[in-house]
Length: 474
Image (cartoon, rainbow, N blue to C red; front, side, top):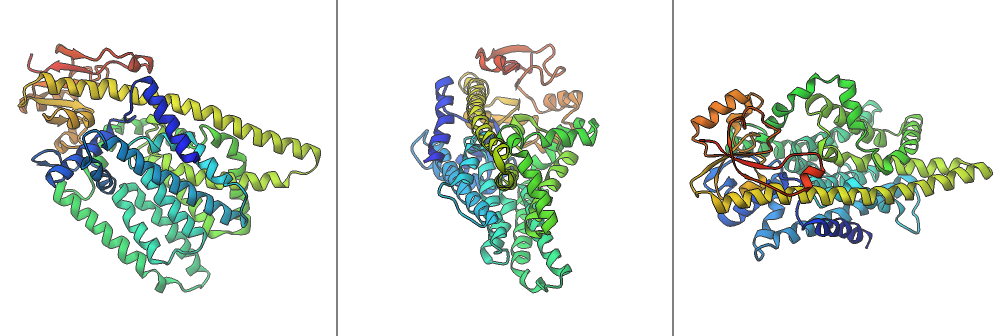
């Protein structure tokens, strides 16, 4: 019931501001691949042109049935499967927490903490693969704490991780750390590893083969394009990059739970609990990997939302244990204050998150979606449109697209930050229109005539500029 209430709250906030939709243009990329797969049975963003712009093949496949439903019902299908994954994640989160605490409670306290975390609700309604990845992480974590890491089901889900998102495969490191610890202690478990090794290696090779057939590279275009686009961030000191990333899980109730997180880690180190520490080590390694390779925290830290449940699991169980140690009147007062603060902060950020979600959806609907629909209705079917972003444009415009972010136009990746070379490239390709936010490309838009500009107030409220269509050949 709580899952329905929290998810519906965010959807209703979006509807009250403008309409239902997605808070990220990237969600429309998945929908476009899913629709074309459902219609043509080809892995294409633009019909007739195979491309590797979908980071998550498994998520795209799950979206396909929504495009067999009557027109417009794909949104409802996306929110429905997201709800199932959201509720399922909360269930396994609660089960894992109770196993860690070696006791159950009358109310699913831990599950409610999970469900009320605003990042997770935002992710559930984002239309992205994030909630699928969180579900897999929670399922694997539950099997880790219940010591079922050598089962076929653990191996199978582990093998599917890379099909959800390339960076997800790093979670296998948790299993590796556990096995190394067992070997060090002389437990002789190597013979039990063949299931996961066989399935994970086989799945990874198939994933690489799939991408090689589609793009000619082992990973999808997004893997390379994002790193090239944000390479300028490498100029920031590593410690600052890591610090900004670490702020993501503690923005909200995570801040109140921080003492519990520190206490639980301390206790696991003291008791040498290798299984639980392996999960914490993976979390740090994951964040460090992003700080080194893709240190971006935009869109509410979307790339780090999947690790928030790991943080919450450690922090919530640690806080309850820490509170139990407080004795006397002073201890009771601190305990009650802590619990009340947790509820108050959770409620405040629940609604702040709902407002943020509604604004994000309104921006995508009034900028990317509305402008893409204008292009569909006001340009020739043969028109070539260069754009950044391409999600809604691909779904609504039915035009040939040059992707300035490189997701479906990989030849752009080497010149992605060089506007002079991009200008030459667009000229060579016979581009007719440029669709972008004007503050994203100062040189590309200079001297170009504006043929259409969104007039919605939402992006201005967020401090941005309107999505604009330019006549490239002017």
